[in-house]
Image 1 (tube, rainbow, N blue to C red):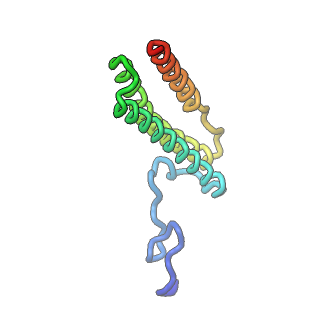
Image 2: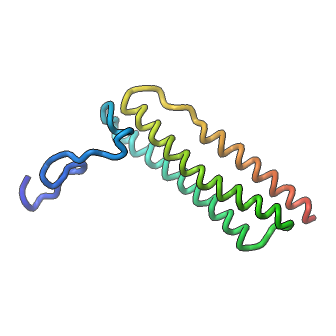
Image 3: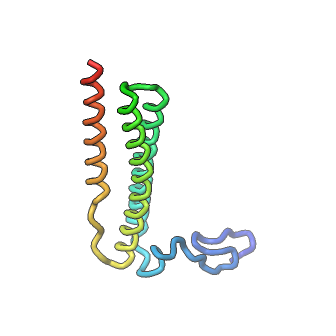
Length: 136
């Protein structure tokens, strides 16, 4: 490699390939089609954005002081904040499982995160409906 050329992605400046992290994801199998790898990464980032929205909703409810009664507001805030953190953790685990499945040629994992989010959104919606009914 000429002195002025930059190293290729995944290579160190001396031409040796750097190990990819985390090793438990990249440690086996073959490199899948980059389009699928990038799609998996975009999906992970979409779940992170969802997580940030849940956290923002919890912070907004806490800051605005609505709804009343206070116990219900605090319950909603805690549920939204915990759900935001849990969503990020589960999204990372799903990204890793999908990546390993693609690398090893195994079937993709089930979509449990969608079920979790559906149940959570329905639960929060029901709590907000109670708030609206109590405030009316």
